[in-house]
Length: 415
Image (cartoon, rainbow, N blue to C red; front, side):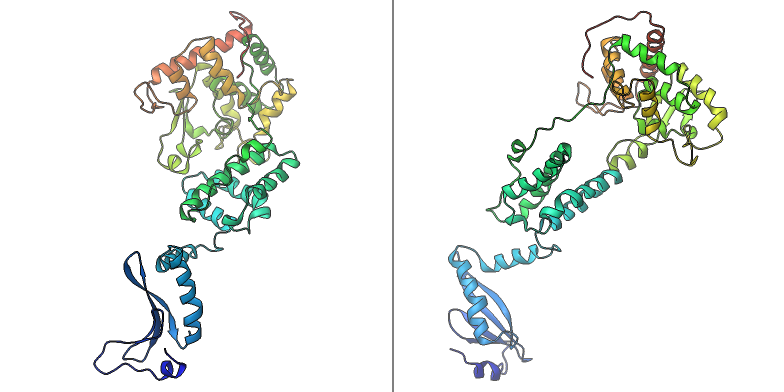
């Protein structure tokens, strides 16, 4: 057994690289020729010998070396845990700022995913974490959060009527837990499982869209009679003709248009895609029917001197607001039946039901990534001839609906 005096006066014998002074229970003090002294504990685990460093003397005194590190390691060994491996795992877990708190893990998960997301999606996700989850469970350790605790946080969101927000918050929590679990202890589980059944059901909502031909013809005639600004009227008339996303249409630039070739080329960076797809993907090509080309040529004298086809009323260096066409639809009395984005659903439904056109080409015009019968992703730039014909057929069909002729009334379907 060592004493404090032994430890204080210990030196390494001449000719030795190091000298070990044994205490008890596998504890020993290792002295080097330079005079440094370090504590080690020798143990056996699953038939193999190992040793665990307990610190330097005199920073770690004899009493501390015997009681704290050694006894804790013995308990781990008795429970079937390799103490050295347990220390390594603890050290790895300690590399995360804030430990394993929900906030620390969620922010780490967000940082890992951010490079794959668009900047808008990344910002919205982080804002939701900060506003609806961090105030309630942000400082809690992941392993200590109980299912009922998380459920209570989600129900607080529901109490203010934000059913969709609560549903999305649970989805975020599920992703955070799945990210954390591979580094957690074997006894941890995904506490988000089953919580969805305890929340108010959220089934999402579709954008309002008219899919009955006769009623859609009435909408087209009302749009023709719109008395607002020429820019809003043109955007309003192009919306059903081209059935592209509102954000793409209102930010349309003259440089993207080839009116002689009847093509609109939307850069990949403007498309609804992941960050990687935006940077590496192909542009989305939209064939323009003759009716669309005529509308754009008529608008060119008014806005052709600037960047945007539909510039904002106050700031011409920015596109028109998303609310412009929406407000126009409400002023015409169709706002509750037809949304700007809903023109995509209207076109998708009637192109198939009324004109019986190729669904793959329709999806290509919608900029949806679909697969053909052989499992290959449908190339949006292929079959332009077919897509030109399809867009022209659709524009001609809308002219007929506007005039109220050749309309076949079918049972109305949901968009």
